[in-house]
Length: 528
Image (cartoon, rainbow, N blue to C red; front, side, top):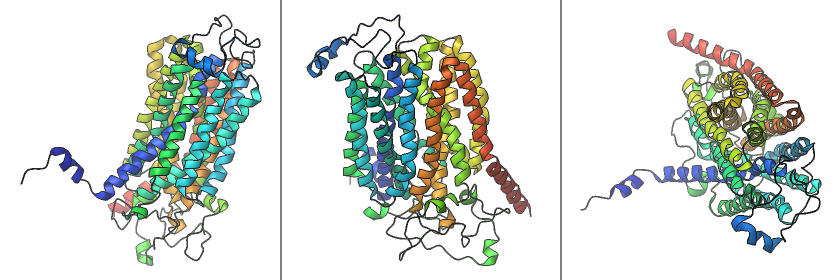
């Protein structure tokens, strides 16, 4: 019998369960990358919406001239000045552009609290599909303002508000799905790699938007809108919500210490431990940050949260019940300030580079992608370190502590030349996005499957929405504050970001202290 080809041997070396998990990992990665891809164009187009008044107003259409003419006759509107696209051509353009960011992010923050509650009561595949199709529509709607020569500020604000609301369907859905398929083993590393979809989406969105920004900025929104709508159709056709739907095992590990993240159709029965067993240290991977008592011992029989359980023990957890899970409030408030910093860079970095480096909108957009490249490595590094140390809060705290002085260096060194800007973009991206990535993925999944929930995995969507919704409040405040502060100088914006990093670290101090004390107690126990 002939030997199997190497490619076939490679395929058969993995089990059916492993292939399904790899497929879901890749699919959810692409789905949420398309969400961030559709959010990025506004930051790239800002440099085109408001130009330097000395710049020429002549528009170069190149190969898209004929295409644009078929949609709307190309002409110089009487109310378009040499400073850009009205109404963003006025001296208060930074406040107006900040209002666009604030409209989107405020709607996103409010909608996120509702999205998790709604999402856990509906099939994920349908909920996510509708959200992606609607997001594609409203993203493209913003770009249509270019083709139909719309200069009403409220048109763009309403497009941003509507898009912000429908985009809240994404995060709770994909985190719940990935949590269903992957257990807690090496969760930090797995989700650190998976969460790079944020940076990948930002990079692709920047490149797509920058390609058309100087010639036909409407397409900088239309093309990402079409992309996320197409991915919505892919979601409807291929997304598998839970491994039970295709007769796969619930977790990749058969360890008895693994807590299964079941779907609403079944429930994991947790073993009852006697008093002697509960006095022993639990698996550090499960208890590394979710500590109920002062001696770091959390019994499976204890319940700080009593989820409303129906006949089958699968009813959804209440909002207040989710808040009582140990660590939810601390990490939510930490994420508020961490996301404030991250989203200020997301929405204002290209314009900052344009002003400091004196580059055009396309080159500034391309250069800003280096911040997201650094974010990819930062997210993976945070997950790897937190798995190795078994300390999520301490890992976040360490990166936040380094981020503040790095931002100060960025504000000073970036004015010295392009090479210095490149280096600082990579370092800043890693330190700013590392804690943000860890909290929104591995930490949210840990908290959403906390043992006090007694196997009620339907809480995962609500917990994820609470944490990310609170973070989105910071995401809304950051760009708004940047728009208000930047007229007084970019240095003041960086001071605001450094203070925000310090506040994020402050909210983690209690959890960091518990982790260190738990580690000391565990070491003492091993010595005895």
